[in-house]
Each structure stands twice: as structure tokens, then as C-alpha cells.
Image 1 (cartoon, rainbow, N blue to C red):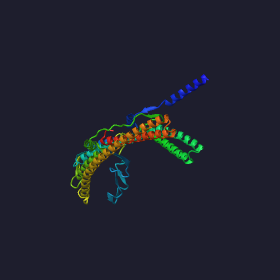
Image 2: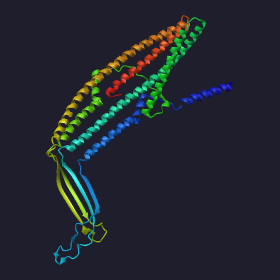
Image 3: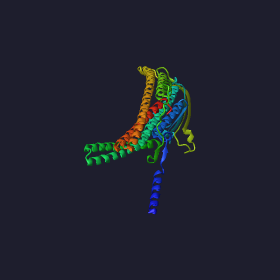
Image 4: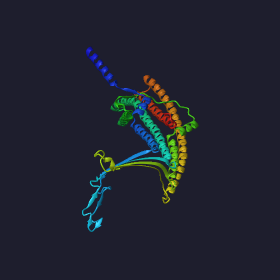
Length: 450
């Protein structure tokens, strides 16, 4: 018997040890750090930033020289250096020549050409400079969008993490309530058998048990979904995660005026709106540089090499080749476009005016968001304080009911109801802490330091 008990103890110890192997305590700070490294959402946005940086380099390269080439090889039916004299072209009587004469004879019919062209812009009415500026503004906009995506990812991860904390913390009290309801159900069944209560009282408690089982299933599923969501962001195995961070329960003591200033300063949306205004201004300059009577100037160098024989195919192959070098200044522009450039300028001016209106509107909206965030935080804080007081009251009532039960002043069901009331208040307190945590993080995200 002793060996059997020892074996059971050893098996139990090994079982629980194996269950704990691989479980990783994951704090929210660590989850956030892993999400920064592994989130595909941020990787995609980082790729956009990288492409925008390469676009800036491309725009700058247009200000430098460009060297192009063209190579041609073909067959000519009538070589340009061949002359054919038909019979009678020199004299009709007698016909001279009597037969067609071609000279020089055996002229090659091949044709080969190689040309190199070098072009360097001199003056473009600031069009190239405006293009570089637009590309740089696109880069800054993509960076602001990266910050915006990063904050959204942090908020989503925060909501998932602490919804998992709430669900995990709720499972224990819910199971305790279910156990107490089971005890009450047994008491009512015995009372029903004795005829002291009717069947309705038994059905009432069974309905409460079914509702509690539903809440347990809901909490279990919410916990599993939260872990899976965290795994999507962090790349960890959801089966081996233990959430170790808890809710914050202290008021931060914020200044609403300072909050609004910081929100305006750190807002990526407002930064994007300002960049859009600068883009509209640069686009206006770009369009103005392309109106009528504003031609571009550039230096052009052209090197041409052409011939009829394949190089090195015969002793005097170079005699059939020509070499030429052209140098000059080129210009290109528009003289008349039926008013198209004027319409483009007016559109760009309107876009510039609209971008300033967007900045003003967004600034007002951010101030409103800050006000709403403060309102939500203060309300969640007041609700949290109220629930704390109610939980303290329920704890004292449970203690009194426990003592009364020990003194046989209350039956077990009455004591059980007091315990259930305390557990329900603790569940409500966890929900209030969760709501306060979300409101606090929403406010922190608004000012840029989540």
C-alpha cells in the first residue's frame, strides 16, 4: 500500500512538472517588445518607408547626368556607297554602257551603328528640385504612418493582453460561484424531497448554475482568443503563455492643458496633415515650373559610330566606318496647351488651401479627443472607487455571514449567497480595473508614450 501511494505521489509530481515545462511568463512590456520585432503589420509599413527612401534617392539622381546608348545591326538592299549605271545612261547610240555596271563592286550590304548620348540638366525652373522635395515629403509621411500603425498595434495588443488577464482572473471566482451553487442545489433538492420547498426553487438554482457555466465557457474562450491574438503579434506559442502583468489601479494625476499640448505635438495624423500641406505647396511649384514659355535647358553630348563591315572581319574593315561627335545645348518646353497648365495651377492652389483647413479641423478634433479621454478616465476612476467600496462592503457582509453560520444563526444557503455576492463584487471590480486600464492606455497613446 505504501509503495502504491509513493508511486501515485511520484506520478502526480511528474505530471504537474510536465504541465509547467515550457510555460512562459509574459509581461505586457515583453509582449510589446516582441510585437515590435515580429509584427507583420509593422514590417509591411517599414517596407513602405524603405521604398519611400529609395524614391528620394531616385528623385535626386534625376538631377545628375544620364548616359544612354543605342546599337543597331542590319542588312541594306542598296548600300549607300554603291552606284549602279544602267545601259544607255551615258550614251543612247551606241548604248554605253552596254550592260549594267556597279562600282565599286562587292560593296558590303551590312549596316552597324553604335551611339552614346550624354545629357545633363542645366535649368528646369525648379521642377527637379520640387520633385526631390515631394519625394522627401512622401518619406516623412510614410514614417508618420508607421508611427500611426505602431500606436494602433500597441492599442490592439494592449486590449488583447488585458482582456486575457480579465478572463484568466475571472475563471477562479466563477468556478467558486459554481461550486457554491452546486452546494445550494443539493440542499434544495433534499428540501424538495422532504417537501419543505417546491420544485420551482430547484429549477431556479439550476438556471443560475447553467448561467454560471455559460460565463465560465465565455471566459475560457475569451482567454484562448486573447492568447491567440497575442501570439499573432509576438510569434510565441499560445499554448505556453502565462500573462504576468496586472491591471494598474492608481490615478495618474494628469493636466488636461498639458495633455492637449502633448497630443497636438505627438499626433502622427496631424504630422501627416502638415506634410500634406507641404506636398501641396511643392506640387504647386512643380506645376508652375512646367507652364508655357518655361523651357528646360540641358547639355547634350552625342557620340556616333557607324559602318558596314563586321569589325576585324577583313584587312581594311575600318575604311567602311565613320566616327562623329556632337555637342550642344538643348531646350524643350511648351508654347501653348489650351489653358491646361492654368487649370492645373488653380487645382494645386485649391489643394493647398484645403490642406490648411484639414490641419485646423484635425487640431480641433485632437483637442476634443483629449477632452473625451480625460472624461473617460475620470469616469472609469470614479466607477473603480465605487466598486472598491462595494467589494469592501461585500467582504464584511461575507465575514458576518460566516460567523453567523458558525453560530447556526444562518443556514448554509444564506452563507453561500453572501459568498456569491462577494465573488460577484470581486468580478465586477476586475471588470472596472480592466475598463480603467483601457482608458488609461488610450490616454497614454494619445500623447505618444504608451
